[in-house]
Length: 128
Image (cartoon, rainbow, N blue to C red):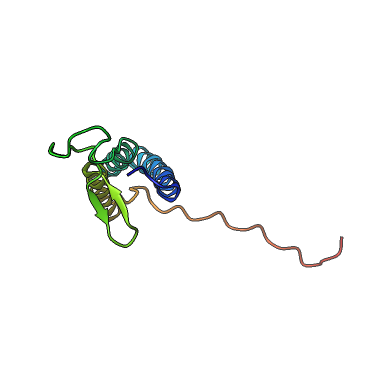
């Protein structure tokens, strides 16, 4: 069964959100020095690869007796009604675990708190 237009739109939005999340995780990992950002970015990349490389099972012209592979849609998300590959589900779980670890073990900057400079004194009269 080929994907419907709604499936393509939802898949495209999910890939776009995962790409933005991966870039944000990489930025946080590079700037913050926390390597859990790389775990989140790797999960986002695996999710994108799982959605983009998805195939229908059984493939047209294929025999239904063959076992589905990691790129065949086999996992159904109940509320949305989408079919995801095991690669996409593993990427989604890795991104969620990486994000939770990134937020849990975020580094606190070592520098002392810099007090803001004092404001200049106000003039007594308001005339120009």
